[in-house]
Structures are given as structure tokens and as C-alpha cells.
View (spheres, rainbow, N blue to C red):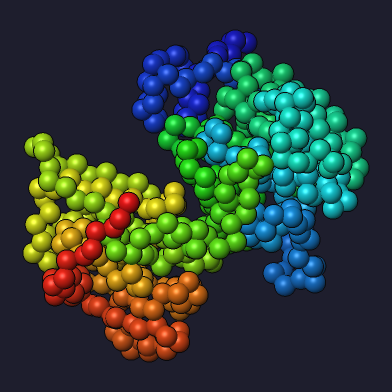
Length: 468
């Protein structure tokens, strides 16, 4: 029989190569190939056994109750999960190093354990004493949570099989767990796939919820095989800058709740603290008498969030103007600048443009177009926007302002924070019936971006510069 040859698998995309080479042919990444032993050839156990038992098919309507939830004791985390952890479910939590993944999970595990449930925390990156030091800093030493440090999958599975009443198991992290049956290093595609599959299978069989911590690549995606995100029931990403105190926990997949839901936290010396009203926090340091600033009324998941959009224009000193964006899509900024020049007659091509979403939040909603345009026009004309107004609406290539969803929720959130005006798309198109605004709020409907530019052109009083 011919001897099986080793293969080289890309750790970024999973493409298999017969020999090592510097660049992966599948994704184009450099130095990502790792040697792995091939899978055994021949028919699998199901093929050798021949036939199997008949699978029972049932209807969609049933009498079974929805799966019970395990509250974590952290309202923002429960919001992202859809109401809490579901028994026998698998959750994958990813984020940059030092963003707060281990901190939030240690806090959640301690609170679940304090509620009378059996919680097991397995650390593969830190020793037990290191985890205890963090727990002491967070004030969690009195929690009855069980702690262990292990990386061998066989030892972890053998220990979990002896637990009959476990409700929650945390594995920190899945990239450190290894299976001795595979001839590859921990963290490789084969190791991550095999270890995660075995742990998830055990969680489904035993009925406990399992949370896997995952590393991310330099591009911000979870390291390891893409199939890992398909195997779990929910995938959560921690976003934010390590130098910034705000952290955003975002659900990108959730079989038991809404996707794109967010939870907002603030990193303090005693751990992550929930932010119940993120809009007020994002706008806490805003100055309404400065040009280049506009407030966007956005929707993150099911939650309305108000954030400040900041724009700065300065004459370009080089041949090619700079376009620097933080927290928004740079391609969409280029589109808006082109629309302002081609459809509204503004000359912005010779200026360096800087755009920032204050607070560290990343905005992907097209409804932010109108707020960004207002900030750009305000910076170009050196006239501030209305300090009591919010903006939202999508801008098309012809300059038209398109309708967006959930404008009632956006207006209610703005009125709750004291805003008295809103600039939004026209809602009378296609028979849409305009709803009554919140009490004390006036609405300014605009159908074209040129109407917004005309508002700033009509202002004759220069703004008073903000003090130090």
C-alpha cells in the first residue's frame, strides 16, 4: 500500500497544498502553511456498517417549550445573547488581544455560579494563580466557580464527563486546546476543528452551555477554520480600541436571538461595567458650537444609538489629498464626496478629509450618509450644525435622500436626550403616511442633498469658536 504523504494546510483559509510554499494559492496570504497529517483513507464507520435506522420526521408545529435561558447577571451580555445563555448551546467569543474577552467571561461565570449553578472555567492561556489574581482585582474571589488550567483535550473531556450538574463551561481559549491524535501544533486548522467539534458534541450530550474564546487574525476575523463559526450557535465579537475605555460586544450570528445586537461596556480598573444608556455617554463631551460635527440617530440591532460624527477639512499639502476614516466605510466617504461635488457644486477635491465616529463605535448603517454629509458641509462652510438636531438618511448617487427604517425609534431616542429637531428623508413618497413626531420635536424633511447644502449657505453668521 502506498504511504500517505503529509499535506500543508493554510491556517487562514484551509486550502490544502501538496508541498510547502511561501504564499497560499487560495487566499494569497504569506507564511500561513502548516504541515498536517492526512485524514485516514477508506470508508468511514457509517459506510462500513451498511444501513442505518430510519430518521423520524415531524411537523413544524409542536408542543415543546422554548429552550430555557441561563441569565448571566450582566444585562448588556444577556441582550446580545437574546435573553441569556441557552442550555446545550455553544457560543464563540472573539476579539483583539487585551480587549476584555477573558474579563467579561470571568465576570459572567462568577455571577452565574453565585446564582447557584455549577460553572467550570478552563484556562489554557494562564495558570490558576494568574486567573486568581484577575479575580481578586475584579472582586470575584468569593464566587463558587470551579477553575482549572488544562490544554489536553482528552483531560478536559474526561473531566467534563464526570460532571453531572454543570450548567456553564468556559474554554479560554480554543486555540490552546490540542488533541494528541493529530500530528499538528495547537491552533492549526485541524486542531481547532477537531477540538471544537468534540467539545460542542459533549455540550449537546450533557446539556450544559459552553463558551469558547477565539483569537482573531490581523484582519479582525476569527483565527482557524471558517467552519468553526458554522459549528457554534452564536458568534460574538468584541470591538474597540485598547486605548479607549468603551467596548462594543456585537452578535454577528445567533440562532436564539437577533443578529447585529450590541452591548456597550466601559473598561475600568475593576473590570467591565455596563453602559445602560450609550447615547448619553457617546455625546457626553460633544460641543454644539463647533463646525464639522453632526449627531447621527442610528439603529444597532434593536437599540437606537445616538453618536457624534466629526469631520475636518484642511488644504492638501501634497499632490494627492488624504482620506482618513475612523469608524466608518472609507469607500462610502469617497462616494459622498463625489456626490457633493458633482450634484451639489461643492469643491472638496483639493482638501484633506478626516472623518471620525466619536466613542469608538463602528457604523455600517447606510442611514448615516446624511449625518456624514451634514458634518462635511459644516466643516467646508465653517458653520456649525444645529446643536439640538439629529440627522439620518441614505444618500444615492444622484444626490437623493432615501428613506430608512425605524425612524420612530430614532426620533424617540433623540427626544429622550433633549434634541428638539431632526433632519430626515421625505416620508410622503410612495404613499407613506408621515407619523406625528415626539412632543416638542420639529422635523425637517429633505429630498435631495442640495437642500441640505442650501441650509448652510443661507447661514450668514459665523460660528463662535469653542473655548479651550
